[in-house]
Length: 161
Image 1 (tube, one colour):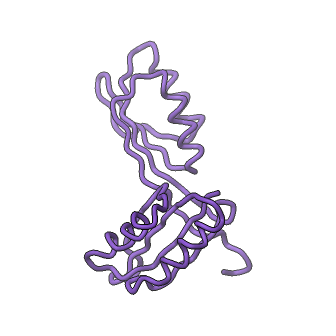
Image 2 (image 1 turned 60 degrees about the vertical axis):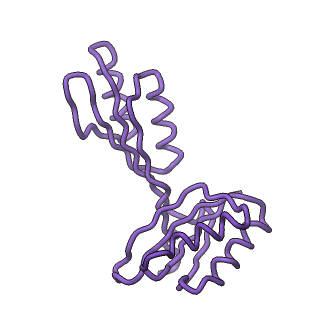
């Protein structure tokens, strides 16, 4: 089972280390971690995706709430969230596979953002599952380099919230 934690924290040095240390000390798994500032420069938002049984996921929330630098913790399941991931992938192409790559990009909503004589960089922003599907479809092409963000998520809009 997976759970998404949206953790508002004080934007200061060492906070990320403290939160990561909590997971490390208790042997909790982090599937994805993204940190960025909010509209308030002194507050950052950590989006942490973690997996485990119900008891473990509940314990993670309790431990996060105990941290002094943590302002607020919101949790939600994957079904309750709008989530996105960004992937940049550099591919080696030739005359034989160029059209297939372009067609896969069009089908999956990816876009070519840089191109040279035999390399192209493709970007895709979608759900983590669809990003993985696109990546799997590119396995037959020569992949030079891949970089992916972690999952970004917000709870779905329900009843004006």
